[in-house]
Amino acid sequence: MKRCGCFLQSDKPEEFGDLLSFMDLYNFIPQNELGPVGSREIFLVDLDSIDLNRWLKIRIKKGYDQIPYLCLSGDMRENLQMSAFKAGAEDILPRDLHPSLICQRVVNLLRVLPALKREKGESQRKILLPGGQIISLNLEQRLVSRNDSHIKLTPREWDIFLILSGKINSVLSRETLLEALMGESSEGNDRLVDGHIKNLRRKLGDKKCIETERGYGYRLRGRVL
Image (tube, rainbow, N blue to C red):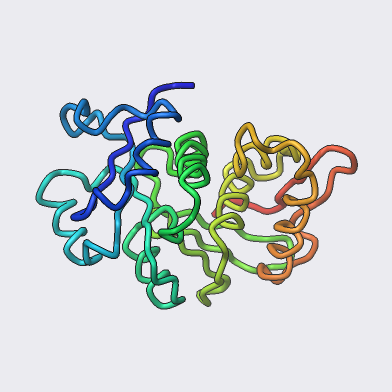
């Protein structure tokens, strides 16, 4: 497994002993060996010890603003999750989630971020669906809207939709989408993608916009604006 420059940003790192041990098992570079800013590929931000607004100031002051981050929090209320996503978080996970699951989510994010982020300079994406709906994606804030009305997607739905929208009108295999979500632990979860696709069709308001290629995968129909 490729070594990962993952850095835990917390005022109470002593509370994350198990997580730091698992980060070592996952071959993440030890925190005390991380060099300059460029060696940090992703941040884990402890929102229980660092206020979100304070973290945003730290990002700018220390030059971390181009480095993606994932939040950990003991408070998973919807409004706080939305604030984190609007501030640019790639995901927000319960602070007491098993460390192996947190580490696997980091690995998966690093695998798909090049596809999920943007080609150079891209921060917005607009797609005209077959039914006439205009879908707008804000890649910086991980927000989706339909005809200017916000659509609430789960982090996994967002990942799948962004991958599909980056390969519009092309068929992507179920295995490709599943690996982006689950990594090497994807075996035996064939129906996980199907469930997310069903939810996406409903939320997008166009059940025909995501076509099923029987026995293979899915295709997002539309036109990039």
